[in-house]
Amino acid sequence: MTYQELKTEEQQYVMNTYGRFPVALDHGEGATLWDVEGKQYIDLASGIGVNSLGYNNPVVVDAITAQAHKLAHTSNLYLTGPMVKVAKTLVTATGMGKVFFANSGAEANEGAIKLARKYSFDKYGEGRSKIVTLLNSFHGRTVTTLKATGQARFHNFFFPFTEGFDYAEADNLDSVKEKADSTACAVMIELIQGEGGVLPLDPGFVKAVEAFCRERDLLLIVDEVQTGIGRTGSLFCFQDYGIRPDVVTMAKGLGGGVPVGAVLAGKSCCDVLTPGTHATTFGGTPLVCAAADAVLSVVNDPEFLASVREKGSYLRERILGLGSPDIEGVRGAGLMLGIIVSPEKRAGIVNGLLEKGVLVLTAGQNAIRLLPPLTISYAEMDAAVEIMKEVFA
Ligand SMILES: *Cc1c(COP(=O)(O)O)cnc(C)c1O
Image 1: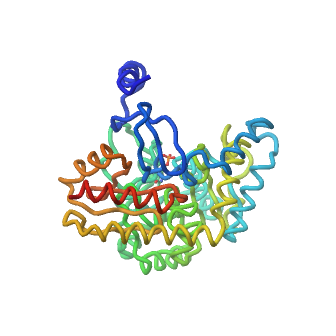
Image 2: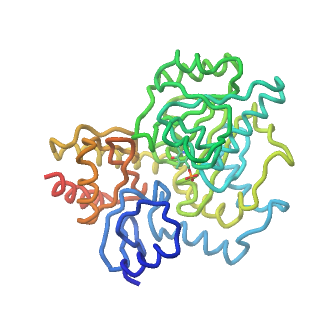
């Protein structure tokens, strides 16, 4: 079917919940995609940071195919090998405690929120359930994670939301201390606010929040749904910040294109969730864990992570080197970058890039967000920058 034919049927049969780009994608190879009409794109988005190893990567495709032939799914009433293997890899790589598998970022955050509240309930009883998040954060689209998200525009329509969230200013320790009163049990942060605009938190602030959480026995939850699994050039962004979170959530890049999320908890709180207190039908199913295992077999390697940092600096320098007056800066880490432009010009630039064959994302008011596959080649980055040159000119 052509784009137009698909669009017509989509409008008839699919709920209108996305402001989609006028493109229907068909297949990909590396960091290059083709639409249903055969037009080629360089992908600087990887879904939304999901296709971490690019398209048609044999490591991922072979792992999924082999597992599909063996056992795609069974319930969590039985043990399976891939799930245990991925958990062991995550725990060994971080020195943390244990893993719970979910199916998405929002669900991983829901699990972390439940864990934090039960940790506090078990130790201190009722009345200590508030979770402090940051203004401008993003934590998901369920009724609870919408409320965890520190942006008023998400707190609409779906009342009543889950109670027990409050929002502190990023990089303002006094604000965190004020909100995290005696009714709080946790602080939840993204180290680089992704949807909010590719905004890295100040390392001094993050260290101070960590110390404050220790002092008050608040769990420090780091939402690494976007920053995790090599995106910033470390397996997890918290490692760049030199902190030890109590709970880390992840999803997007973990499965290399299949839906899998996880809650990784430290030794002090990894036995809080017990039989009957948390579960999911699909979580940790062998198919997605085989994919996650394949992704981790590539990403959890110092040389690969160094290559992500090198590609990130290269792409950043090449973009800054365009010298366009429309580019006010580039922020972020590794291959999570935001090109800062004026809000008025952004849509025109993004559409210009799409037209000439480069896929990008936006974030916040003024960022063009880049989350390319971590395996993107230098030739693909060069080709994308050449197109940016034309569009910014
Ligand atoms: C995308 C994202 C989520 C939500 O993940 P879903 O898989 O869409 O539920 C949560 N937190 C952060 C930081 C994200 O970037």
